[in-house]
Length: 520
Image (cartoon, rainbow, N blue to C red; front, side, top):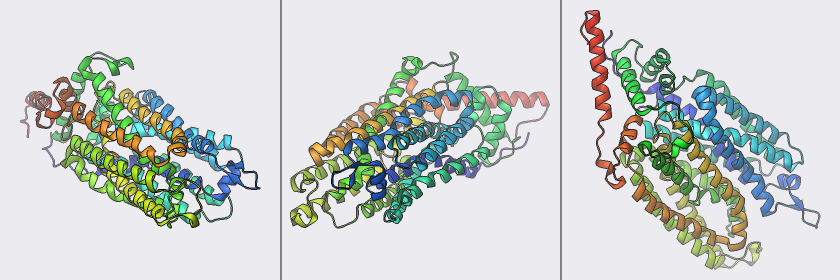
């Protein structure tokens, strides 16, 4: 057997960057539809007559157009649990990327039918929702433990980059006096879907999934490639042996059911609840309100800036904010990131909500009737919106997805991640459906709802969320089985990895003795 080589994570990093492209699609769609809602040609085609020869998009129609994608994502997030186990992680990505592309084609081909538009958004949402669950599942199973948090943050960074690029494209096309103003940014998603479909043929299957279904030789090849070492290197044998030992230990009991995700066995109910609660709290942070309805909301703030320009600013701030998260997710850890972010965002929501309520003019007030106080209030609200989005991008944007991708044993991982992702999309749907109606009645005070949720989120994280940075997926399983208090978890030391390593080295030594050659 060859000596142990020095591993390289270059291939694993490239895989993580590409696979996170599936999440880019969702970020891009959020930004595109936000800009389309105030494009004249889009309003003329899918709006309602205003009685004066023009058209308008009511808050009800806006919410239906926007929220149908989220309804699809909810269904897709749950459905991928069946395809991920049956067809593998790689095959499942291929299936749902194709469904997303079909949904985009339906939207792009729409002429005047709001029904066809919303059906297309629902179908595209099926693909986006499924990919939202498969991406952290795949990245969590292929990334080295020291880089897992960073690799999963790339997932969030792709969303933000998608948002930013969509805002730029909306800004560039919104003045085109034809359907190209919205067809170009919407139709570009066809190209994105095709890129994902073509690239998927070069992705390897998850080594943990391969070991889980007994395909050990393939798992060896994938692990060798992910670590940049020859397949016959002793490092591959050690890693495969350790994974196999740990997977068998955590997967005793046969095939998992959906009910097992909520069982008391190995604290699975607590892990599933934590994954779902973090996704619930993330959606009610308030940032998606700005993403979805920022254009229309800021129009009433009386600012001199174009709503499209403001959205580009928000998108740029989001990209900048996510970059330090690549480092902080490992140096600060998961708990500290969530706790810090909850406090910062809560302060922004409180100040923006109160300032907006007491200083902004009523919605629809002509700009020439706005007072200096109204304009200053609008500028203040936008400033704190920018700070809110920045804080979210650093902390609450990526961290819940990182946590979701690393909290479950292999036997229930697809199902538990599906439940967490579906929770995200359920509340994303409810927010996008009801937020314009609520904002129409109470205006900026809607931000106080998000303030209350962030305070609740701080308390929940402190009491319920353990620190998982620096642990393998199997050691996270051990952490929960040890019933460590969340506020004491940062100092906890695992034992399973050492036990698996000793067991593997012992087996390798025994094999070498049989062959009559010493282990290098």
